Image 1: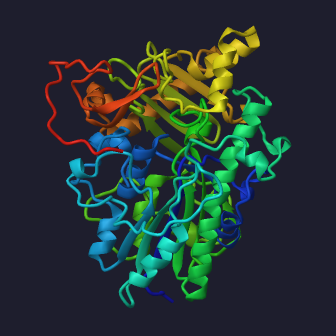
Image 2: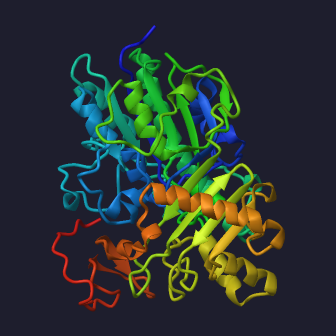
Length: 500
């Protein structure tokens, strides 16, 4: 029996990586709302963002296209061209009431995209609260969701984007320990120093995940009170890997692997754990199919509705055995405005990474390493630079240069430390994954496959730049170097910047 068109609640945290939810066994977070969605719905073990950065990842979720198919949408602090459909607009055109609280698509310029509001929806952000720490947002996410529901026309299904600021940096240092979290509960990745400062940094991060989850719990309670919980598709995830060195903005496991749980009480059998590879680009076509709304233009992502409605666990769809991910320009932290382009393919057995500029610095130029968020963990690694050989090796893992190709065996763990690409015993595996990755990218029209990858470095940057002294300057456009000099080879750019 077909139910009425479902409501859709997307809860997306900012920089929450896998496996940092209690349902995955993480001990330093408390996520009862996520755990409930997982227990009463489906918990995904192989969910990935299409890019390990905010704007491109969110653009992929909204459009059902990979970032390399979205022109300016592939880079941070740029724009998402209006010509690309977003599922929120398609649902709104079909009669859905669409809204947003917190962070939607971004950072970047909505105005330069030719849009009148954030692609994730119009904002409901008037309610404020006193957060647990000074670093957390004052946005009362749950109260704003309640206002949104009150403003909804009678009988209209809703589509709501709950975009928390948390756990994006910066944090109130030591807040996790002060809240009662324990250093012993942290499992420090092997590429970071295992010291109190790093463990405490993870606890501060975990406290912000807890806050994201508490507001989700309030939203679910509100839906339950209104009798709409089971008629609502609830998707809970994070936009990219955790904000630590060698994670966020990288194509290693901890940069692109994200938590994902989905509940739809009316149609999705609960209590299941699925290992199919799923990408954010699959969510837009899933929402549209569930709402019986056609795609106006073809999407690369494929609906996972059949997986959700199945009673099966483990690998449900045998064709979902791999995932592709990519990265272009992140922060503005190189004098030539170039990014550090990468693409990857992940399978059950291996992770293959192609670095297109191995002579560049993956974390940004050495005077600042600006592609890595400031943090106690980063400070600890920088202190390793002049230490023992073991300490220096940790520093190099996050900040050193990388070879053109990297290959990691999944059974070696998620830290991705042992590069097998130059091992003759893995030569065939490296070649096969390289060819499979390039075939997919060719089919999807990635400019890097036709020798036009330079285009990504010419797209406008609507953020604020930073130099080696850490001082933030004004808006940056193509044609401007970090020193502010005009580059006549690129020419002028006339779009206005949005201050972010």
